Length: 177
Image (cartoon, rainbow, N blue to C red; front, side):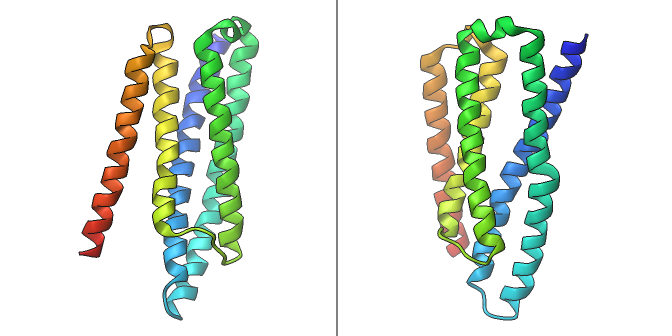
């Protein structure tokens, strides 16, 4: 029964973690675009977006990540045989990639909190889709486990990536017209 509770909490906090990751990068886009605006709009928007990013990152995203990992480790502790499953090795690898993505988000967050940026808003739109691809891969892997057909799964993720990139380009053209 404890395992089931840990699993439910793991899923709940995974949702909050990803919600935070999706929205923080949107805030990065808005912050970068605000830096290009004239005063006083630049300062007003910049200050508001910094506050929103700070609250999102520190109150939702980081706690969501920490609690997701804690409950996931708890599930592995209660059922260590999961570590013998090949799908779990792939899932843990994807989670390491997700944590790397979060570290990169932390770096961008710090830069933007200081009013600096090394990236253009278009770059951030593409960067935002990394979390989407990782979410799809992790969820499909966790649900399908042994029945996952790697060729179809890989093809599906590549097709999703292409569709996301085409969508971003279409939206850019729409915004510019």
